[in-house]
Length: 321
Length: 274
Image (cartoon, rainbow over all chains, first blue to last red; front, side, top):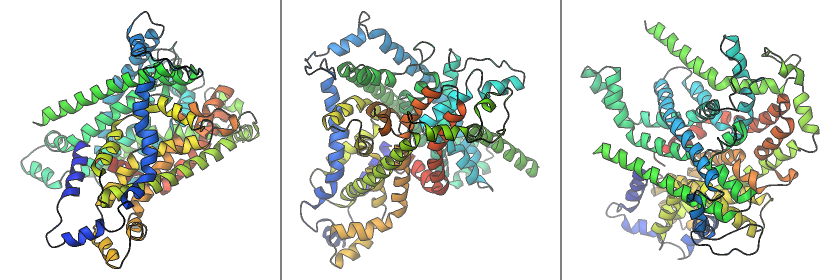
C-alpha cells in the first residue's frame, strides 16, 4: 500500500508538460482562497471528531480511572497499564487470556487465509465460460455480515441439530463432536468459519494482482522450458509480492480484530477460552464501564499490532533486496 | 485429453461452489420449516411441509420487533451511504485538484488512519458519542463510521486518473470549482461513486460490534444487533432464527447480484491502485 500512496503522490507533484503550466494554474488557483477548505470541511469535521480526536482522547482516557457512571475521573498515570502487567491485579488473568485467544485465532487463520484464496484465484485466473459465476459464488459469503454468519454457523455446528455433525454421521464419522463448546473444536470452528466467510475477499484481490502480471513473462518462461510449478515460483509469486504483502497485512489486522464469530458462535466457550481481545475491551469499557482500563487495553493492543505490521513489512522488504 | 481436463476443472469448481453456497441454501430452507421439521434426524433437505412458521414468529413478536430493525437498518445504511458519498467526494476533489496550505499534511493524516483498526478507537468514540447525546439514536450508527478514510482515498485516486483537459474546457467557459466538480467531475466518476456507494451500504448494513454496544432500546436496534437478541430468545428454534438471518441477507445478496461488478472492482482496487 505504501507504494501505491507514493505513486499517487509522485503523480500529483509531477510538473505538467511545458507550455500548459499557465492553464493548469488557471484551474487550480481559480476562485476564492477559502474554496479548498470549504470542499474539505464536511469530511474534515467528521475525521477530526471520530478519526483523529479519538486517538489522542483514547490515550488520555487510559491515564485516568475513568468510570463511565461516575463524575470524578482521577488521573492515575500509567496505573491502568501497570494493572495489565502485574499478575496480582484482578484484570491480569482475563486480559492475557483474551490475548492468548486472539493470538491462537490469528496464528491459525492467517496462513489459511493467505494460501487458500491464492489457490482459488489461480483456479479462476483464465477465461472460461462461467468464470464470473464461480467468482461470485466464492465471494458470496463475504457479502453477508458477521451476525448472519454467526447465527448460521451456530446452527450448522450445533452438536445435536447441526448439519455438520449429521452429514458426518451419514458418512460414518463421529457425529457428536462438540464443535462450539469444547477445545480444540471451538478453534477449528472459528478458524474454519472465518476462512469460509472471507477467503473470497482475498481471492478477488489476488485475481486483480494476477491479471497485472504481463502474459509475456509466462510466454518467455514457457519458451525456456519452465513447467507449471517453475512458472508459479519464478513468475507468479514474484509478480504477486506487493499484493501478498497487502493481503498478509490486512488479514493479520482483520484476524486480530476478531469479535463477532466468537461472540455469536462459541460465545466464549469453553469457559472464557475463546473470548477475544476486542470482546474483552468492549466488555470492560462499555459493559463494566471501566473506560480507563479498556482504553489502556486498546492502546496496548494497537501497539502490539503496529509491531506485528512493522516486522511484517521489514521481512518482505529484506526478501526483496 | 483437454476435454478430460476441462471436465475435471468444472468438477472442482462445482465442488468448491457447493462448499460456499450449501450453508446459505440450508439457511433459506430451514427458515421455511416448522419447528418439528427442523428437529428431524436425519434431516430432510426440503421443508415438509413448506411453512411460514419462522416468518410468522418474526412478524408477530413484539419483544423482538424484527421488521422495525429491518427499517432501522435500511434507513441507517442509506443515510450513511449518502453522507459518505457527499463528504468523501468533496474532500477527494480538494485533495486531488486544489492547491492549499496543509494539503499534504491532511492527506498524510487521513491515509495514516487507513492502517488503524477501527476497533482500537471504540472506547473514545463511545465517550465522544455520549457527550454529543447520540447514544441509542439513529445518528450514532449513521455518522461516526463516515469518518473512515477509505472513501476519500478511493475517490481521490479515481479523480487523479481523470484527464484534466475536460475540466479545463469548462473553466475556459467560466465555470467555478463547484460547477467543475458537480457538472464535469462527478458525472465522469459515476462508476467509482457507484462502487463506493455499494461498499458503504454493505459495510453499514452488516456492522455488528458498534450497534450492539451503542443501541439499547429494542425499537432502535439495527437488524444485525437485533439478531443477537433473537438468537438468545429462540435458542434452538432454528426456523425463526434462520428467518431473521434470511431477512438480513436478502437486501445485500440482491445488491451483490445487481452490482457485482462494482463490489468486485471496489475490493480488487482496494488491494492495488487504491
